[in-house]
Amino acid sequence: SRNIIIDTDPGQDDAVAILLALASPELNVLGITAVAGNVPLDLTQKNARIVCELAGKPDTLVFAGCDAPMSRPLVTAEHVHGKTGLDGPQMADPTMPLQEQHAVDWIIETLRAAPANSVTLCPLGPLTNIGTALERAPEIKEAIAEIVLMGGGFFEGGNITPAAEFNIYVDPEAADIVFKSGLPITVMPLDMTHKALTTAPRVQAFRDMGTEVGRMTAEWTDFFERFDKEKYGSEGAPLHDPTVIAYLIRPELFTGRHINVEIETKSELTLGMTVADWWRVTDREPNCTFMGDIDADGFFALLAERLATLG
Ligand code: BDR
Ligand code: CA
Image 1 (cartoon, rainbow, N blue to C red):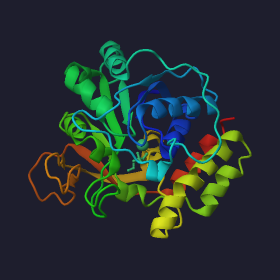
Image 2: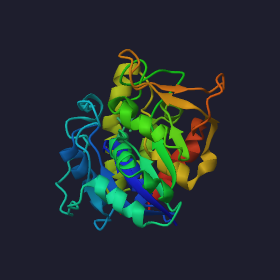
Image 3: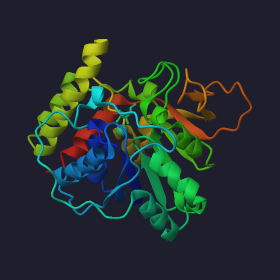
């Protein structure tokens, strides 16, 4: 099975991504590294542990990483995810431990010891931990097979500013390091995730599992959805982050293009914009595969199938 590190800021959609990974035998989760993003770090690291316990995997290694972006103050998204980051169902505090080592130190140590091209990184939040690790220890690139991340967007505009998607906006300098790393990168942008909405029957499928995981997933989705429903009148919310994990298991659900993407780090107006050369109008070297489409029914069927295998 494929070795992965999930770097995350849970977040209801991050939580579902973690559940999908822990439920999938194709993937071996070496560890989960928390980063500040949707909510501050003390909450994201705690939320990551809540999700591992819910999945029945309390032995999963969870580390806390950077509590603020590389060179800016933290911007959070309680307006979407609620005060805890996982608002919706009632949740008890986790009892499984948080590892003592800093997430960035653990990422560096783990990748230094790993064989070449043997670990896939799955960033689901701002890229602070990954950017910091790459800057501090560029030799870790050796061990990285690929980076599959949720972030950015193109034709439809941003969700935190008119130009930027949240994960990239929060730490554009870190994103810039990642996109310039020369590593194979696959990107799940907003425009694609907005093609897979949590419609009523899809949420009902979670509830119908009759398990704790199914109930929590349905309640998280209900909470997460209210933002899109109230604000945009849409029939559900995009479940952004699980698309990263779904891609590792079922890449045929996605289509995209190998293109050049540059990160805006200077302009006040368009800070954090992913300037995606979808039509290849420049001669800039392609540096990532930018996904444009998803088989939404296949994606939700995979989620339902896998989450049903958890308790
Ligand atoms: C991204 O931002 C967060 O709010 C979500 O968890 C997702 O990773 C979507 O822009
Ligand atoms: Ca996230």
